Length: 134
Image (cartoon, rainbow, N blue to C red):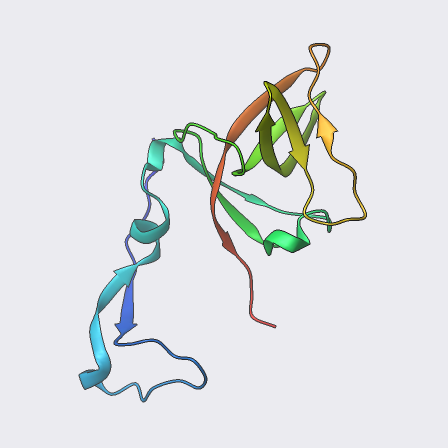
């Protein structure tokens, strides 16, 4: 079983369109633990670091950390982590007319239709993407 240490950090009232509020206590609404926010089912959740540029259109960049939940039933249009013919990848799953396609979010890359001859397994659904501000 995976255990996370709780780390509660301040959550400020309101949204910040530009700038940052004063860190005065009267702006703090409550504290928040990012594990509680991003990990709904700890036993079914894992993190993986993304690489490459095939999912840029979905906001996934090289070095980003993906939060992946294995307990979510994958549906069409979800972003998933898959194991295809011995290789792990992250793609958008599109299901149409009984066919499963893995779609990149970068026009440089072609979609890939899954066939009966493929060794294919969906490892989980991406629920959050964590990347540094630039």
